[in-house]
Length: 473
Image (cartoon, rainbow, N blue to C red):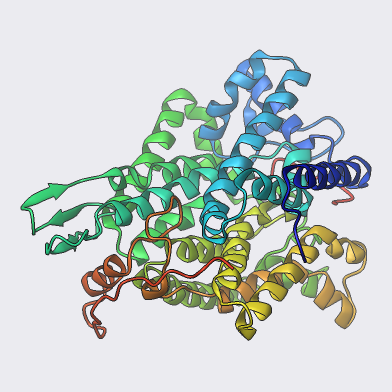
């Protein structure tokens, strides 16, 4: 495909794409009418006026507030404005989060390929808006994109820490202390502490708002970033204690009752639940899924994830490590509604970037990009809803769990870039530093494995739900 090279041609293409995307979004029959935002708004407003927050139900439904109390504290300002203003604020916040995610995920590929930045991001933005998890997050008034942006900010901090303290040819020796961003330069006799000291703050806040991002604390532990893991845990604990101080009664109810009541968020067998638990629930319906089988599956998934995440960090590929963690979070969560699948987007970005890195004519390039396009199309298609009323039979088993199979396939086969082939060591976000830094990190964090001397990086030439989900998270 040949892209237009003139500014006018590019502008016309962007206008056409934006019009097509807008038409699709305006006519798609799966708009959620900001239902979940309505749950937040009603529950927090009721709480502000003295009502128990976890007793609130949207009139005519059984859906209520299911987030930890700290989320309610963060949402209190929303009740100071009217409903249309709350919707507008939700949309603006999601737009800002989406812009940050797109920039951090794509800027390296855009620069490496030599593309016009405004044109590339305009095209990618139009395509991004069509993804079902993204459009559901907007139309439900959900917070998924905000949480993803918070988590990826820590990936950026960790990547910048690697880049900033990489060797610069002065003959010095660089040591990574495994604390999430503290490095010592022995050649100059100086100690640098850098931006990596803040890594973990975003994950901690996200984990306090919703439990799912807490798996990224596990990622930091598994990959031995002790300082960042400690920061994330401390921030999450501090935010939770702040909520206990502000709302002791609500905190007691949540941590002793509401958190364990999965019926509050809807049926586990509902087709929108694209997790391992959802697969089991649809297989066993109307009986409850086996907790033993679910737990065994979770253990296997976590083992695979830990192995692959350590591989990614040993190779200096922070982006792949975070992407793999988002995948396993979706799989092991008891409830992963379709709009939660924004956690798959970093993995899709890694897949596309890996394809673009391969040389033109390389069969691997065609294969990776073909898979990326296929996954993108499926994630836009809302295909799982074809089995929303009947998920029986082989076709029901395969089709109703389509997004689960995508998550599982990416967890097993997501490419992990070798540090020695990294061409973007000095680019912003999710660029994992130089080959020298990757080898240094490998040697420091995995001393029992074979150590190879670092080689300079060689640059690559450019070449909907029928029923609402409630405030399920």
